[in-house]
Amino acid sequence: MEYAIEAQKNYLKENLEIEPLRKFDSTKDELYKFKQAAKGSNISSYLRNNAWSDDCERNTKVFLVRDKTSKQIVFNFSLNCGILYEDFLDDKLKDEEKIVFKKYVEALSRLKECDEKEQNQVNEQLNKAMGDIWEVVEEPDRVSKLMSLAKDKVEILEEKNKEAEDTHDKEHTQAVKETFPAIDIKFLCRNKDYVPQIRLDFKLGVYVFWEIIVPHILEISELVGCKYVYLFAADRTNEDTNINVPMWTPDYDPDEEYEGKSENDVRKLVAYYINELKFENISKYTILKPSFERTCFTLVQEVSKLEENREMIWQSHMLDIEANYQSDLTIAATTDHPSSDQSTSDKD
Image 1: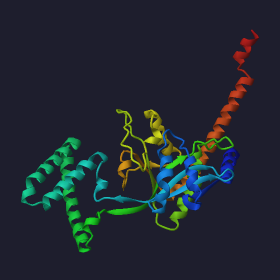
Image 2: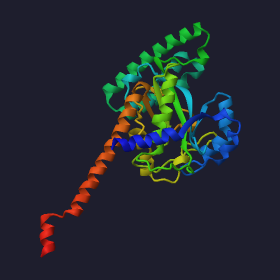
Image 3: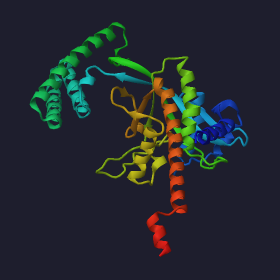
């Protein structure tokens, strides 16, 4: 059964190759033939209208996956430099506390800096922020703890701002506890007109990610620091509401890829990133998210685990094929050799 997966991977290895978007000038015209596999056309529209200039201006680095024989574009994706960071004291906060805590810290900071004319307005802001904390937390001891942490954070920020003033860059910096270099994957999309010449026991995107994108990321990580890789998946749902489609933006609309699909379908797409590409929910650090991806589901994994995860994925697919094969054998044996009860009944 191992040979089946390896044979399929070898076929794709022999037939697919990665290529920078602007390697050939003729590629610009070819982009008009690309049709994104999912419903809609915003990613293909981005390729035609924005990708070339974005790549030229270093806003992103776009890559194409091609069929070596037909030269047909199979996939496209882009890689951006990104960053994760750990904020002061955030590791002591629960997820539901972070927003109200941040507002309270902002109000406390303003209170220390405001003049007499702003006093009433800032007091109102502080009272509202305190009320929001009580509404979310409700437990008096926990509220007291958060308020104490907020005072500590304000003092830390004051120290950091003083350091920034000494270096004359206060207006252009944000003090955080620690930063972590990362790579942001964007515009990952398959050309719906491309069909492999053999049957695959896995999604084509699984191969493209693990055998084309991941080796490229690992090569980059040997040249520059790169601790994480992340992406934003379009999960707009929860158990109580329908899919919320945000405002369309000309550069990228992450919802378009899933437009018209049910809530369960959208959740399956996010599960695909988690189960097949081994991304995880962001839980420990913070990722800077562009406004047009503000409602997307943030997924991340460590670069140091990519090779281990790749081996795990292919092993799981080999086991799946073996299990299906054994199941088919069992069904065939049952059909060819009916049970004794059934044989007796047939004779009767």
